Amino acid sequence: MAEATEIRSVAIDDLIPYVNNAKVHSQDQISKIASSIREFGFVSPVLIDRDNNVIAGHGRIMAAKKIGMTQVPCVYVEGLTDAQRKAYILADNRLGELADWDMDLVTSELEMLLDNDFDIDLTGFELPEEHNYSEDDDAEGDFDDIEKLESHYGVPYQGNKSRIADIIISLLPEGKRLVDLFGGGGAITHCAMLSGKWQEFLYNDLNEMITGLFVDAVNGKYHDERRVITRDEFNDLKDTDAYVKYIWSFGNNGLAYLWGKDIEDIKCQACRILTADTLHDRRTEYAHFIHLLFDNKELVDNKRKIDRLQNFEHLQALTQLEALQRLEALQRLEALQRLEVSNISYEQYEHKKGDVVYCDVPYEQMGKESCDDYGLKFDSLAFYEWAKSRKYQVFFSSYEISDDSFYKVKIKAVMSLMGATTNGQKRNEYLYSNMPIKSDE
Image (cartoon, rainbow, N blue to C red; front, side, top):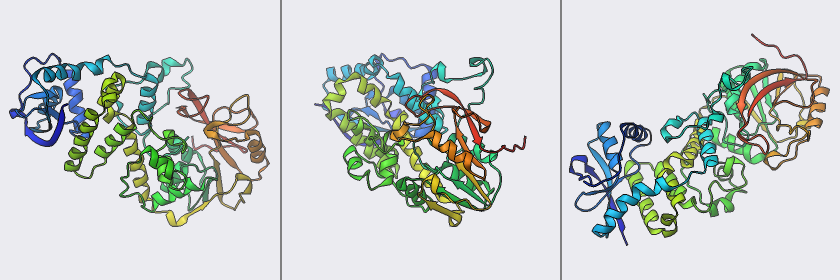
């Protein structure tokens, strides 16, 4: 059985390409590989034998030359017969081409990257046509204002308002205190604290773990957080560790582990590579990755999983880095001393003079007049009646609702990424209020 041994840097001029390499690399492909190396680093070493003959990585070598590299990291593979080496060179190039893509999963991953303002061209994929909206897609132009995320607010959490936080904050009036009654991951509170429109802030949510995660992030708890959480660790810690519960769960819902059992080992190892502190540590972790690949016959034999392995650096491992960076970025908040945190129901809120009240309520499911998303039950009609009964102004955001007695202004056309009935749909989102909404326009 072949064995991958130590990793070391080797001069490109000392490497010997396989003369009968049947894989043809176009200039466009080489350029894309070069862009990937610039973005992620050379995280996928070339495989060579002890005589510096290249077994896998011809395209990466050409891309490295294109960007001026003179040396590349290489892993020595020993124990292959001449016939096995020739067969592996063919298999390395061919198995990925035979694999099918789960395009629903690919689209979901690309949407996550877009939501984090990541250049998806680096992945080699494009969103399906139905997700590339333009004025031509809608005769009235209702959805021509869907934009990429420009800023990241709050902690990763289901239904996070990061995409439209800036717009919501711009529509809310100035006052003494911004009250975020359904705070969730804190995107609105975070954006508000950076805006300078209010002196004080009330961040409220029934979920004490998510508010705790937000405050811990602001206090710098996750500055050096580099844990890679396995499925077993997730199940053991999710009820007590908010970082584990929300950063390492699918869709940040706190319920299910981030990856399926068939790929979790590979994904975790990919995270260890990408979060390594030094280049040496990264290369060491990659050597472990190669060992894992060669030692796992079931993975090697499954062409679909091979396909995922070959593209791991473009998939969910990167979303974990984005999530961690969002936690670290919260440290820069300077208004923490003016932040009050509570965990009460909206009915328990007591209004104070100068309060500007905003509610990020769960989206009503039309026809049900309630919300069942995220595993919760929310009575939309009861909330509408509460809002209308207030003697002060209440703002809330939602898609179209069943109660037409509220004032409203369009926030933005957005693509719903979560929800049992709305996932992947383009929807107009509105800011509603029980009183007229003043606009600067």
